[in-house]
Length: 270
Image (cartoon, rainbow, N blue to C red):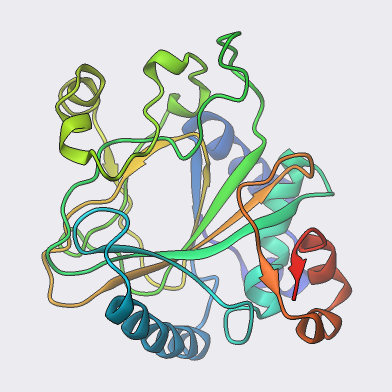
């Protein structure tokens, strides 16, 4: 969806556009918001990210499958800018479903390098109440920020929208295990996701934001280009749930705006 200049100026979507975003998230399981970050901010993000990634790859083995890295990010500029971590439009959409007291509990990234392969379809979390096989209301959203254009050749995320985020039966919810990718792809559930269902590639330009229900099935795809495909990943959730731990330097935290402090109020201060 496109946000108008008037909406960016006020920091609020119109009621019609907010309803559209809500319907996308509740029915499809995801929504794409275009043109969130301008060229200057993107350039700063990409430059610093590249430095961190080079150092991380040099000392760390791939941890999301072949040639694929999940890398934590430092809570500092340019990543910790208010327009990124507490963007008013993004927070408006998320809060309109999860409530005003959402927190951010995950601050990291996912990068597919040349040579990366298909992951298995997976949900980022198992069902909250597996013994009851319930379809529950949303409680957690992932915000993905592509730092380059997501193209068919450079390893865009594939998603299984329209309902996989509502499956509550643990027997048919694929959870991630990146040490057994091929085995899980060849399992009955893996074959079902690839042969009986139709995934959708998320093709979107750098500077956009993808908000998806954390339960929605998805996977990484092969990067057949010669350049990394970097993507930031933040998780916003209801205050009783945590997807991870965000660490922030105490001095850095004290200098944050009240809005950012509220969103990161459960962060571990160093």
